[in-house]
Amino acid sequence: MPLLVDTHIAADRWTQVLPDVTQTLDATCGAVLDHLAVAESAAAFEISILLGDDACLKSLNGAHRGKDRATNVLSFPTYEPGEWKGHINEGYPVLLGDLALSLDTLEREAAGKGIAAAAHLTHLTVHGVLHLLGYDHESESAAQQMEQIERDICARLGLSDPYGDDV
Image 1 (cartoon, rainbow, N blue to C red):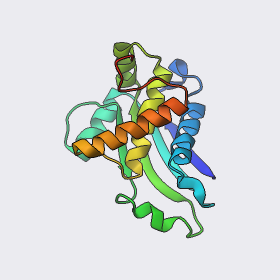
Image 2 (cartoon, rainbow, N blue to C red):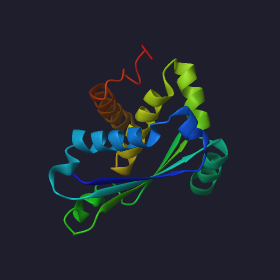
Image 3 (tube, rainbow, N blue to C red):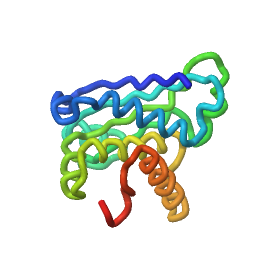
Image 4 (cartoon, rainbow, N blue to C red):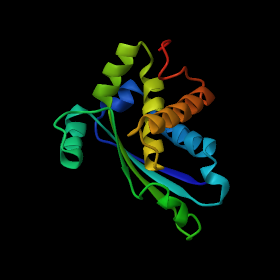
């Protein structure tokens, strides 16, 4: 499955803290699509990712969600849930949407959980891509389903349960 992960690094510290950040993002996005068998067709997919800091995510969160605070990851899906499937065989890449991540929040959360920043980046990217594909955690059952998929993909990538007590 052709996948283009278009990464824009808006905060230079990303490459200092995580030198392999673009490779991690590419591999993680591909793992999500593979796990969900999204790529069973020959369709190409595209995801754009902005790597920012707390100031950047606070601005985006305020502008798009009305929340005056930074956050770890924001997802901006191109399509309504499931609608992207209708665009698979139209002859051009299916733009799933945009993600934005804050290095500042990612580092604080990883330190608080006692895990590596790269592991937390992987989990946040899995979480964000699932949102692009239409998953949410608005209800208890939807949250349980989404969290189980996150656990499965993280395990497949060699990470511990991101929601477990061992983190």
